Structures are given as C-alpha cells and as structure tokens.
Image 1 (tube, helix red, strand yellow):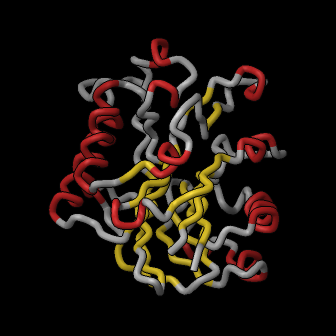
Image 2 (image 1 turned 45 degrees about the vertical axis):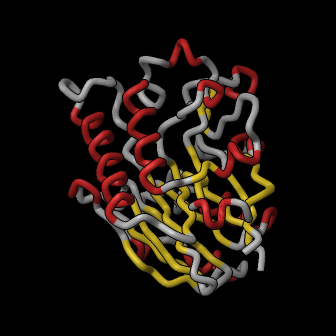
Image 3 (image 1 turned 120 degrees about the vertical axis):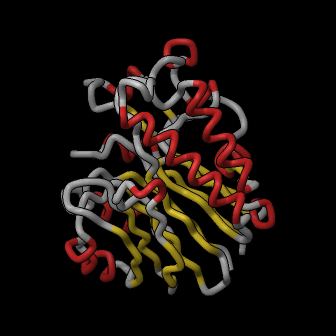
Length: 262
C-alpha cells in the first residue's frame, strides 16, 4: 500500500504549529518527520495533529534545542533513538511501520561557523556524529529502511547556489561532503530525491539573513530522503515544496517529500 512521506525542519514545532497544521491539511502525507522541534516531548501540540488524522507520534525532545518527531496516520512503533557521540542531544528517532519498513529521522549537528575542528568544537562534533552514523550502519547494515532529515550538508555542486563560493562554508566543505558520502555508502543508502530529480539546482533551505530569499535564491539542499537499495526502486514523485518557505512566519527550510509503493 503506497505511502507518502515528508521531512521538514520546522524550527520550533510549538511556534509553528499553525504551519504544520496548514501543511498537513494541504498535502496530507501519511508520515511527517520533523526536526529541530525545540520542545520537550510532552509539550509537542499533539491534539491538533491527531484531529487531522495523525494520532501516532514517536519523538525525542529537549527544551529549546534540537528535537525530532515522527507524526503518522499509520501505527508506528519506536525501535530506537541514538545519541551518537554522547552529546546528550535529541537528534534521532526510529520507528517501524506495520509493513516492516523502518524510518530513521535525523537532525545532524549544523557545525557552527568555522570549518575547522581545532577552533570550532561544533564542527568537530558534526564530523564525529557523521562518523558514528557511518559506524552504526557498518555494524548493522539497514534493510527495508528509509532515512530522512536535516543532515545539514549539501553534497552535490548543484545542491548549492555557488559551489565555488561555498567550498569553505560549513555545509558544503569537502570534508563534510566526504563524511556524508561515507555514511551513505556504509548503509548502502540511495538518495531518493536525486534519483527522482537527477539534474539541476535543487534547494531545501534559504537563509533568514536574505531579505528577499526567493529572488536571491541562494539556497542549499540540506534536507534529504534516502532509502536502502531493497526498497529504493519503490520511491517516486519526489519534490521540494519551495512555496512553504514563503508562508508567513516560516521555517528557513522547506518540506521534502517522496512516495513509496510498498
């Protein structure tokens, strides 16, 4: 039975509850994975989501920072939450659907401003987090699984507005791209979005610092949908809902969607 999945860094689920409700009403994905919820689990506004047909939720949260949640129309059972490199951050939640598919929802550390772990602890944490993800997938290679989330890296040259100008900017540096590639390879993950949309500039994030983000269009593709090879061929209809970035009081990320015939 097909299902549609969306991933969205909401940048505060309580502050932007109305936007989540609007999105669920307009698009009606079967599953919505949220990152940067910035809320303890017990304070996530579940009632409104349930009223729209999303009674199931698994989540990890913390006050004011990080946080991941999966809202679902279908039953979903929590099967794990990794605290990679023991940061004490709510950055991962995994759930299994009744059809056996496991969904991993990740919020990879952003990495701060300077791409140098010697002067920027946050950059080192980001690289170490990706290494821990890689090692976890080496230790237990995933099957019938989907990985989504804000991975905070735009890997391809056409995933950023200017490859040359962003080579030394956190999110597109060669060392980050290499770490992400190792993580992807370790799990055999297929980049579903780029399998569907192989050519052309593609972004899911535009900075708040740009007063006219739409016209300037200095975006990056930081949000991803991956799948293991055994189910990647069932994915189709990938899209990024750029128009949501233009809603009033938006997140700086746009939702990324894909449908799976499983």
